[in-house]
Length: 357
Image 1 (cartoon, one colour):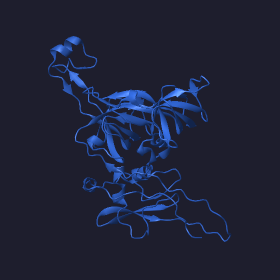
Image 2: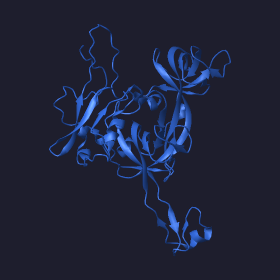
Image 3: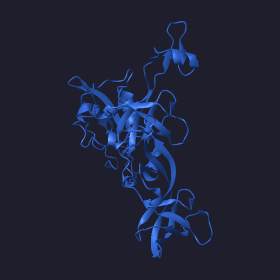
Image 4: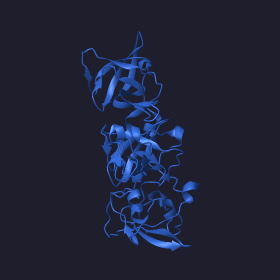
């Protein structure tokens, strides 16, 4: 039976020139071959072979045996070979033949990362840019049933100018994000509460709308805005190492907690203005602490040293930063990016740094 390829194009797998300059190093104890499993991601697979998983396309660069090497499926056998002194992977599709005529389920291709961890962010929450005039945005007035919490399929009224027949997102203003060093406002989180379809316009800029979808309860005062263009993007990424000119910092987590782990989302104070692109891989760094004291017998960590020590000691020494993980930017705004943690050797905390891997 003809092998049916349905699926995922490993988009733009040729790396940028900076990535090509990196040395392709195999991971110690790497396998000679690997059978792709259901639920694998390209990041997982590359992590079996490479010290730097984002260099996957170079391991996959030359493969004349495969007609279309952009597709990888569960059951495929990936074997390690060498070409001109560099490691390469070859691919062998596994095809099950049967004399009986039957309909086989379509194979799902292997995604770059764990899409279930970020799917909600690709379709929902947004960041209001710094300087946004929230008071001038359309907002929910309510309905004629005196409901404070509005639910799906209800008709309600919005104050503002909307285009009849167009869908809009209903957003609730959330946390305001500031740069941890300068205090500059970077943006404000907008939490998607629902989607409405604009109907007829009434006097005084009042528009009747249908609440076509609830993500959570819609409340009076929630802002009504066009769905951002980013919400329409496919969740497919080409991995490349970030090229920041200065390190950034984790300013929040998805759960609003101070800690996060593997396959959880964090926000950082670097965005498109800083050269961040979707698919960039960043290192997560634990900041070095400062040690105070003039002699080996009077050392103390600055965070727990006495006030007297802090005032008297001008020779505090900062310990080196430590890399504790790696994350990929998947949603990039002007001054803020959302990152998915792909690897973590320790708990990741708000205040940790991000930089080039």
